[in-house]
Image 1: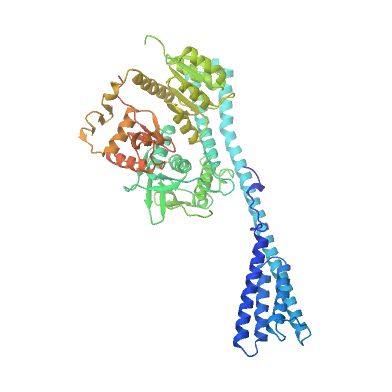
Image 2 (image 1 turned 45 degrees about the vertical axis):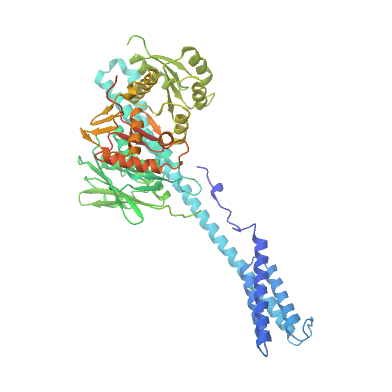
Amino acid sequence: MNAAHPDKPPLSAPKSPPTRLHNWLITLSLLAVATLLASFFFCIMDNPTSNISLVYILAVFLVARFTSGYGYGLFASFFGVACVNFLFTFPFFKLNFTLTGYPITFVAMFTISSITSAITSNMKKQAQILSDREKILMEAEKEKMRANLLRAISHDLRTPLTSIIGSSTVYLENGANLTESQKSDLIRHILEDSNWLLNMVENLLSVTRINNVTAKVNKSSEPVEEVISEAVIRLKKRLPDAKINVKVPDDFLMIPMDAVLIEQVLINLMENAIVHSKSSEPVECSVDVSQSFVTFRVRDYGIGIPPEKLSTIFDGSSSTTSTATDGRKGMGIGLSICKTIISAHGGEIKAINHTHGAEFYFSLPKEDIKIDS
Amino acid sequence: MTHKLSILLIEDEKNICDFISTSLSAQDYRVTTAHTGQEALPVITSQCPDLILLDLGLPDMDGMEIIRQVRTWASIPIIVISARTQEQEKVRALDLGADDYLTKPIGTSELLARIRTALRHSNRLNTDSPLYKRPFHARELTIDFEKHLVTLAGQEVHLTQIEFKIISLLAQNSGRVMTYDSIISNIWGPYADDDNSILRVNMAHIRRKLEQNPAEPQYIFTEIGIGYRMIEDEMHS
């Protein structure tokens, strides 16, 4: 997780290399179009001078609007005045600035161009400042999330570690006075807590598969049934008594995803359902398909989620505020990691209560929507 | 067992070394340990262990290098132990000739099962494989390689030619993971398309014919990002 700057795209002048050529192209083509239009008016009208001036003024305005810097606008206005003078007013093909009114046209065009340029570059600067500020805010938000996550993690890791260290110290220091069953209890607690730690670490590690810069994942087409079946098998290795009913559509279905991450999400959700539902009913894991999304559901028949928690359940903060009523640790982090993973896939994750318990569901887009190329 | 099977454990973490060699010794294997690659290579050439357990992250050299060197002259089964959860690493080790892999942390029962499988497969290779001809049997499933017959609880299962080839390949390597690439080049030849979706689709068909619930398979397991593993043959000879 490298901090700030590498993931900051070059905001200032997004297309910096082609700018100059680009500006010249815009200027020259606009002037060419204006000159064509002017010659057209010149041919068909009796007294076209005012129209011709207007056409050039428009061109100057547009040039000033669509180029960066004053130079191009000034060049355009100078070119416009010269053109009108040279091509479209008597004496033709001669520069003559002594005609009445010319200074005024001249001044007007210069003024328009410089004011427009000033306004547009000001506008661009404003936009730049705004987006910079937004960027900084987002960056700060990210930092805050990172700090929160770190705090939550350290808090959650300390608990099982304390228990592991405590149990092993007791075993080593008082081994002689302990009964066999006390000893095996201590060891079993060590095993349980270290398994929990491992699970947490795997969760955290999985997040590193998400690209830091784009917050996207490497997707490949994976069969939905294989991902679910592996998730179930891995979970049952850890919780051999887990009861899970799996239903997948009959049709073979492959969708783009990072299978390892989606597996992690499924495991987290199923484990949550098993551990927190306080119910011996099997957890149901099912998949349904709509036009453009595939939705995975993990549903339990237990106590449900406290309504006041529903809105913040994926924030990762629920464990730090220690309202974790049942004393289980780490649920918050697991769920916030789920959310991170699903968001990185361009999907959505939600939690709801149904009449007999809780349901978590997330949907993934069927086709890889190209958000950025 | 008349003579103890020998296992060389190459692992730099002393604690892990200790617990693995303790549990293996308890199962009547003779365990030699090496903490670095430089230490390990001469041991392999001089003692010719029956099996090598290899940690990929060694301090002095890449574990892949050991696989490469050993495979130039011997077919000793190698089981890779890796803390790396990156699938590509595992696939690379398997494609270089490792027989199987285990991801840390390792459960002892899993470790022992993998060791037994790897040893059995290496025996089959050595005895010039009349065993390959023996039908595969696990739970309700029987595969008769000679008769091209697959039965599930006594009922014949109709598979296409390709499906039968895939399932035979997996059955002959039962208990071992087969990478997507190795299956594809075995079935479709070495110039087959890299895209493995044709294999995935065929596998989905097979699963629908063999498994009661394709999402809770009993016979063919997926190792996401790596390949497939068939349930162990029950007729240990």
